[in-house]
Image (cartoon, one colour):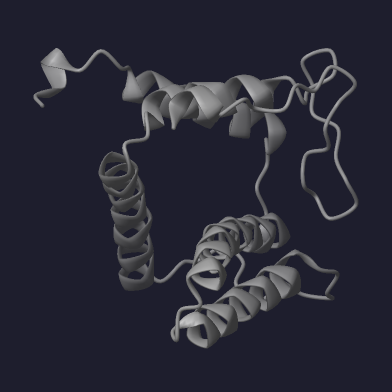
Length: 166
């Protein structure tokens, strides 16, 4: 489908997310970089957990490999989001590493859209719903944080309803 004929506004969704992150994380530092990488791996582990549920139901012989990957991603996430004296990854300055990282991040976004398409999900609608839910975490337009730096759910938090988008 050509972008002109798409009824969704993916650019708007990304810009809304960016604005939310700028509010939630106004001055990123080396430790907040680690926390964000930890959050990224936490979300990837969530995807694997969903697949584990399916593979358990199917009694798949590949289940142990997926389980190992889940626990590895969860451990990396916990390490990066946990308390430590110094950042593990921090702000990356090496240009080649930054290019490789950006390539992986953008490719992940493209792959997420592709998986959504193959599964029949409305990712654009779900993205808007997640944005709305994330904004509902703020109190008086400001984020409130857990000790690990993650944004806490505020008093007006509304969990996302993703059922209409599957």
